Image 1: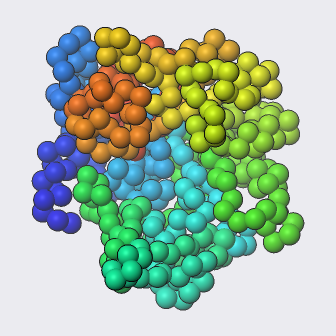
Image 2: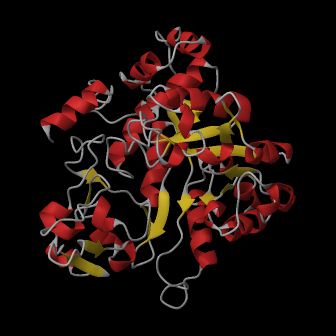
Image 3: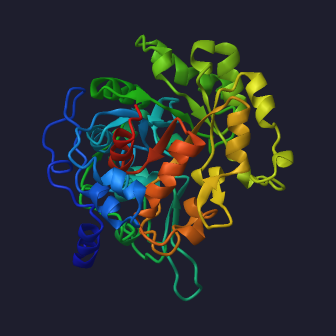
Length: 415
């Protein structure tokens, strides 16, 4: 890691000692450890009643909370969807952990954010025999033509046994690379490769066992396939959605502890109709902001609307957090029309993702796009979090570094 990057992480309160220097596996009875990050953020806040209230909670104690959801584990510093990332999230008090679910060539479910991200999240390109099986093997950049380096490696390119030989790394790639080694770099300077020396990849079934041992609940996301369905002619979307639920039923997990998610409303409808014990708290991830004509400030552009979703049996909706807030005339963060309408329809709300934007001094980027003019320091994320919690009344929030949300939730009495 570059010395400059380490100084940047130390200044941001991201380098931990007991938390990320762990040698023993986390367990359900372990004490919650937050490290310096939440304290740095509180200190960075503008003076006011919220900062005063949060500062008074500094001595703890801190407990695990379902309000704090580990987004792919704790990928601000750990390779996402690895055993180490999940254990770090649990130590930071995340009461719910996420395995994004996709499938291998032999139709086994594994934890990956995308079916085709192995080239940026694992060391597959450094394993010649497996790299040769990638949908698109590594192609180097060509400075003379301006062509960027590229590769495309999918879980469906390899078997489960082959998948389990890989190691997780930070999700990144250097598009200017002319060698595989260079391409596998590219980690943002506000993240770190310090814990990316051999992340342990997980199957979905292994994640269930691990989360149970960690005392956490489950929020698997059925990822949209990157291959044509039905896969190999007879593995359809319904088979895929059912397989996810079957892996919880196989070990007798309480459906009330499982929050199955999908951006595909058809998956949510399938669970409601065919697995009602799981479907009653299935989460509809709202990605309609990508649809032409959709405007989160204008209810008439939402199809289906909130009332229709509720009538179908959808109980939890999960948009990105920028859709839930805006600014009033005094430049204060307030709930959006989308948030107010969802709540009025009786929908619970979960949102994503905090601690995924790097330093906020220039407005925070994509996740802060509707409140950018009110964001000029890292502490402002706690101001936004407070509006989401106390005014929007979200049920929980995904975080790339759960300690931040755990601190806030414990201070405000959110379980």
